[in-house]
Length: 108
Image (cartoon, rainbow, N blue to C red; front, side):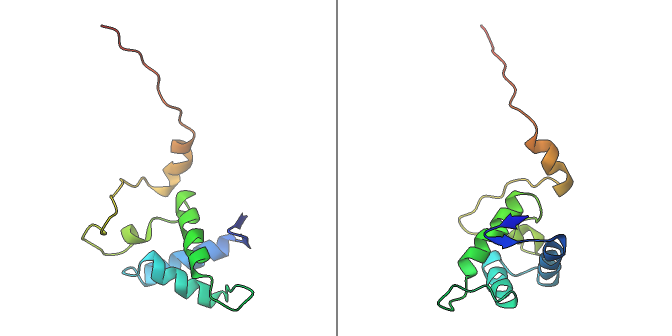
């Protein structure tokens, strides 16, 4: 599959999961910088593409391949400016995505 212009394999996803597990206190910003360095993800001018890598990690989270970085770690405080949304186990995400809203009219 291609995400953020990169061909991603199951091994890549497993590698990222291991990174998160090995460094649970790191946030998405730190992980994206480290991953961009490890994958040598750079723009034509040589600048590290850590912002593209951060977007890549967000897309993986939204598709259910990763749990959010701040929930994977040992953080006990609520991240500033972010609301915590209950996370469902990753295996439930495809099922939840297939659900449609209920329409119900209440009459007086």
